[in-house]
Length: 177
Image 1 (tube, rainbow, N blue to C red):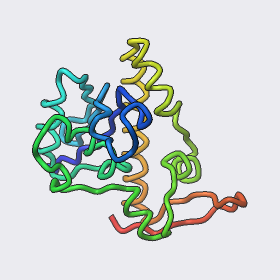
Image 2: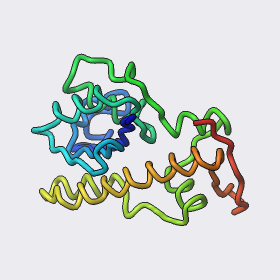
Image 3: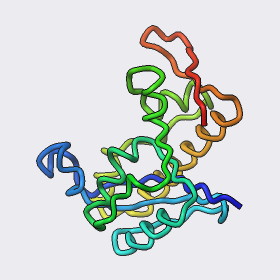
Image 4: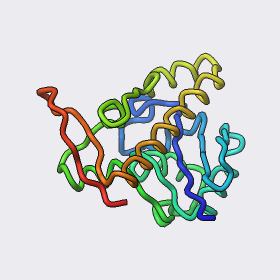
Protein backbone atom coordinates (compact mmCIF):
# COMPACT_ATOMS: atom_id res chain seq x y z
CA UNK A 1 0.00 0.00 0.00
CA UNK A 2 1.31 3.42 -0.97
CA UNK A 3 1.84 5.60 2.09
CA UNK A 4 0.77 9.19 1.44
CA UNK A 5 1.77 11.31 4.42
CA UNK A 6 -0.12 14.55 5.04
CA UNK A 7 1.87 17.07 7.02
CA UNK A 8 1.67 20.37 8.88
CA UNK A 9 3.51 22.02 11.73
CA UNK A 10 3.30 25.07 13.94
CA UNK A 11 6.20 27.14 15.18
CA UNK A 12 7.49 28.54 18.44
CA UNK A 13 8.29 31.99 17.05
CA UNK A 14 6.96 34.39 14.44
CA UNK A 15 8.89 35.78 11.47
CA UNK A 16 9.22 39.09 13.33
CA UNK A 17 10.78 37.37 16.34
CA UNK A 18 13.51 35.71 14.25
CA UNK A 19 14.33 38.69 12.04
CA UNK A 20 12.16 38.10 8.98
CA UNK A 21 10.79 35.55 6.54
CA UNK A 22 14.28 34.77 5.22
CA UNK A 23 15.03 33.13 8.60
CA UNK A 24 12.14 30.63 8.73
CA UNK A 25 14.39 27.84 10.01
CA UNK A 26 14.94 29.86 13.19
CA UNK A 27 11.22 29.76 14.06
CA UNK A 28 11.56 26.23 15.52
CA UNK A 29 8.77 23.67 15.58
CA UNK A 30 6.31 23.62 18.47
CA UNK A 31 4.10 20.77 17.20
CA UNK A 32 4.08 18.76 13.99
CA UNK A 33 1.36 16.40 12.80
CA UNK A 34 1.42 13.62 10.24
CA UNK A 35 -1.41 11.48 8.89
CA UNK A 36 -0.28 8.45 6.93
CA UNK A 37 -2.61 6.51 4.68
CA UNK A 38 -0.73 3.32 5.60
CA UNK A 39 -1.37 3.95 9.31
CA UNK A 40 -4.81 5.54 9.09
CA UNK A 41 -4.13 7.73 12.10
CA UNK A 42 -2.69 11.07 13.17
CA UNK A 43 0.75 11.17 14.75
CA UNK A 44 1.68 14.17 16.86
CA UNK A 45 5.26 15.26 17.52
CA UNK A 46 6.66 17.88 19.86
CA UNK A 47 10.12 19.39 19.38
CA UNK A 48 11.75 16.64 21.44
CA UNK A 49 10.49 14.08 18.86
CA UNK A 50 11.13 16.12 15.70
CA UNK A 51 13.69 13.58 14.45
CA UNK A 52 10.99 10.88 14.47
CA UNK A 53 8.76 13.16 12.38
CA UNK A 54 11.59 13.74 9.88
CA UNK A 55 12.23 9.99 9.66
CA UNK A 56 8.54 9.35 8.86
CA UNK A 57 8.65 12.00 6.14
CA UNK A 58 11.67 10.27 4.64
CA UNK A 59 9.83 6.91 4.59
CA UNK A 60 6.72 8.33 2.88
CA UNK A 61 5.94 7.47 -0.72
CA UNK A 62 4.55 11.01 -1.07
CA UNK A 63 4.40 13.96 1.36
CA UNK A 64 1.40 16.24 0.82
CA UNK A 65 1.09 19.63 2.45
CA UNK A 66 0.03 23.21 1.88
CA UNK A 67 2.98 25.60 1.51
CA UNK A 68 5.28 23.06 3.10
CA UNK A 69 8.04 23.44 0.51
CA UNK A 70 8.61 27.10 1.43
CA UNK A 71 7.62 26.99 5.08
CA UNK A 72 7.32 23.69 6.98
CA UNK A 73 10.37 22.06 5.38
CA UNK A 74 12.37 25.22 6.03
CA UNK A 75 11.41 25.09 9.72
CA UNK A 76 12.58 21.47 9.84
CA UNK A 77 15.91 22.34 8.21
CA UNK A 78 16.91 23.74 11.62
CA UNK A 79 16.96 20.12 12.85
CA UNK A 80 18.49 18.24 9.92
CA UNK A 81 21.14 18.66 7.22
CA UNK A 82 18.92 16.66 4.82
CA UNK A 83 17.33 18.75 2.07
CA UNK A 84 13.72 17.77 2.63
CA UNK A 85 12.70 19.43 -0.64
CA UNK A 86 14.21 16.37 -2.34
CA UNK A 87 11.52 14.09 -0.86
CA UNK A 88 8.63 13.01 -3.10
CA UNK A 89 6.40 15.99 -2.43
CA UNK A 90 3.11 17.50 -3.51
CA UNK A 91 2.66 21.06 -2.28
CA UNK A 92 -0.98 21.92 -2.94
CA UNK A 93 -0.33 25.66 -2.82
CA UNK A 94 2.44 25.42 -5.42
CA UNK A 95 0.25 23.38 -7.77
CA UNK A 96 -2.70 25.75 -7.43
CA UNK A 97 -0.47 28.79 -7.87
CA UNK A 98 0.86 27.33 -11.14
CA UNK A 99 -2.71 27.35 -12.47
CA UNK A 100 -3.85 30.72 -11.15
CA UNK A 101 -0.62 32.73 -11.11
CA UNK A 102 -1.47 33.90 -7.60
CA UNK A 103 -1.65 32.41 -4.13
CA UNK A 104 -4.77 31.31 -2.29
CA UNK A 105 -5.12 30.52 1.38
CA UNK A 106 -5.96 26.99 2.42
CA UNK A 107 -9.06 28.41 4.07
CA UNK A 108 -10.27 30.00 0.81
CA UNK A 109 -10.06 26.63 -0.94
CA UNK A 110 -11.51 24.63 1.96
CA UNK A 111 -14.54 26.89 2.37
CA UNK A 112 -15.41 27.01 -1.33
CA UNK A 113 -14.61 23.36 -2.06
CA UNK A 114 -15.57 21.51 1.11
CA UNK A 115 -17.70 23.95 3.10
CA UNK A 116 -15.31 23.78 6.07
CA UNK A 117 -12.96 26.36 7.51
CA UNK A 118 -9.88 26.39 9.67
CA UNK A 119 -10.50 26.56 13.41
CA UNK A 120 -7.98 29.37 14.02
CA UNK A 121 -4.64 30.58 12.65
CA UNK A 122 -0.91 30.38 13.23
CA UNK A 123 -0.89 33.52 15.37
CA UNK A 124 -3.20 31.84 17.86
CA UNK A 125 -0.91 28.80 17.85
CA UNK A 126 2.04 31.06 18.73
CA UNK A 127 0.10 32.44 21.69
CA UNK A 128 -0.81 28.92 22.82
CA UNK A 129 2.87 27.95 22.64
CA UNK A 130 3.82 30.88 24.89
CA UNK A 131 1.15 29.69 27.33
CA UNK A 132 2.36 26.06 27.19
CA UNK A 133 -0.91 24.87 25.63
CA UNK A 134 0.52 22.20 23.32
CA UNK A 135 -2.67 20.13 23.30
CA UNK A 136 -4.58 23.00 21.68
CA UNK A 137 -1.81 23.40 19.10
CA UNK A 138 -1.93 19.68 18.35
CA UNK A 139 -5.72 19.75 17.88
CA UNK A 140 -5.49 22.75 15.56
CA UNK A 141 -2.64 21.19 13.59
CA UNK A 142 -4.52 17.85 13.28
CA UNK A 143 -7.50 19.71 11.85
CA UNK A 144 -5.27 21.49 9.31
CA UNK A 145 -3.81 18.13 8.28
CA UNK A 146 -7.34 16.77 7.88
CA UNK A 147 -8.33 19.73 5.69
CA UNK A 148 -5.18 19.24 3.61
CA UNK A 149 -6.05 15.56 3.15
CA UNK A 150 -9.66 16.34 2.19
CA UNK A 151 -8.58 18.99 -0.33
CA UNK A 152 -6.06 16.58 -1.86
CA UNK A 153 -8.60 13.74 -2.05
CA UNK A 154 -11.28 16.01 -3.55
CA UNK A 155 -8.85 17.29 -6.17
CA UNK A 156 -7.70 13.75 -7.02
CA UNK A 157 -11.28 12.60 -7.47
CA UNK A 158 -12.81 15.63 -9.22
CA UNK A 159 -9.70 17.13 -10.92
CA UNK A 160 -10.68 20.60 -9.72
CA UNK A 161 -10.99 22.72 -6.59
CA UNK A 162 -13.01 25.85 -5.90
CA UNK A 163 -12.38 29.29 -4.45
CA UNK A 164 -14.14 32.63 -4.38
CA UNK A 165 -12.62 35.62 -6.13
CA UNK A 166 -12.52 39.07 -4.51
CA UNK A 167 -16.04 39.76 -5.83
CA UNK A 168 -17.42 36.63 -4.14
CA UNK A 169 -17.88 34.66 -7.35
CA UNK A 170 -17.18 30.93 -6.98
CA UNK A 171 -14.55 29.82 -9.50
CA UNK A 172 -12.84 26.53 -10.18
CA UNK A 173 -9.19 25.75 -10.65
CA UNK A 174 -8.12 22.55 -12.44
CA UNK A 175 -5.69 20.22 -10.65
CA UNK A 176 -3.82 17.22 -11.99
CA UNK A 177 -2.78 15.13 -9.05
